[in-house]
Length: 163
Length: 430
Ligand code: FES
Ligand SMILES: [Fe+2]
Image 1 (cartoon, helix red, strand yellow):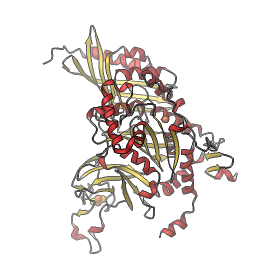
Image 2 (cartoon, chains in turn green, yellow; image 1 turned 180 degrees about the horizontal axis):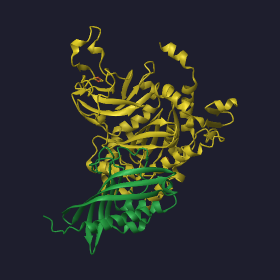
Image 3 (tube, helix red, strand yellow; image 1 turned 135 degrees about the vertical axis):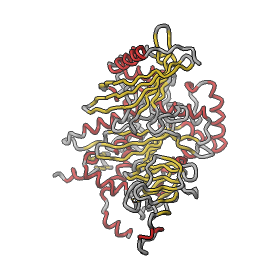
């Protein structure tokens, strides 16, 4: 049994809604502050949603270095797939605080992320699996995995923003 | 209408000018012709034998617009079966992959074995003697063949053999296949994506050395940030790079790698602890192939285009990528990672990491490629600007990888297929 106390759903929802707002508003430097130093961000392939990025080809499997580089690139001028930037709007729902394993707090939530660009609307549907940890008064994101229900990135073509 | 506007290409070798009519990217009639003259005539990549490793393994997928099954029979023979019931049409295999001794059609329960033979027909006594069950197995493309694990199908029974068709591309497939003594394998996980652009724009892009620095500056600044100094490695020095027309519309660019390669080309970001291991791998290549070929396999990168719609880029990892047009301005793309079957778990994880830094719909480069293709396609709406220019390096004795010889090799073959008289060929074949 883990001795980590589970946070309230309210507290977790506050964190996820804040994250969604920062990402939709492209305040990516502030978003990084929600992550732990060793955070991981992954999007598994649509045909192996339960895969392990060490032996399965993912769409995204960023370690801490690549997450920070991704943000730097997206905030620079040369990430052409996001320059001009997409508009995004995230709907986060069905938030559940599932369990504590060691110091990690497991959370899941459903998402629908709409991306608007060149007058097309593409919707990314799926759920997040989070590992959160308590740091002082705050909850921080140690791992976020966005698992798509879409069977292919069609017609989306790419995941060029942070899903 | 101006007669020249009717041609697909202008190929003026004396003047050194090569132009492609943008109608080739936008015209629904052209796509209709491509399906008949290109995709129904050429050898088309279906999959890799490692995707069905065991007897009775199968994978179903769309190839050249058709639902097919890549199936290893209970006799261990790999076949390509057309996924349609010979009774009245239903898909007989409706799972993406699995292992099955039979495929039973869900509609009226005809049953086929893993070799595609029809083995069960409910109420078979209601058929006349003219009904021959052994003629009613699942159909296959008229020609199916395998080159070093890569399986292709061809819908033209009169087409030349796969071996001849691949022509100069075989040498480059060998440089990939030779990376393991036990064979190569497709890694789990398929990247299934798309682009709102004509499929031939992705052909051009996949071996275009000219776009590397401008389109992918963000990738090169990432390399810089992790400590790879590519600015001093003179990538386009003639001795270290070449663009080659491989015949039959295939082409390749080959060049010294700016990045580390998980095969046996160590760079600092891979970590000091791996250096010795990489040197060991390299010595094994030296033993197997001698220093010159070992250097080529390990240190150079290759972007290979196999006509019409297969790309194998052996760069910071190996991607196998195939694509097919749904409409003139929209294509579906499937991509996989290829790796030595005997690679250690640790090396394989490093390879996949390296793959994702650049490649795929969430990588630091491919999304920008997709963006550029879509940007070109939107630009084509200006029908008044009727031609694209692909003349770069045309008068050079040895065009470089930042020239456009590769694309010209593709377009010349494509134009030949799209314009040669068809009826006469068909009669000759009959
Ligand atoms: S369509 Fe397959 S059994 Fe009738
Ligand atoms: Fe590119």
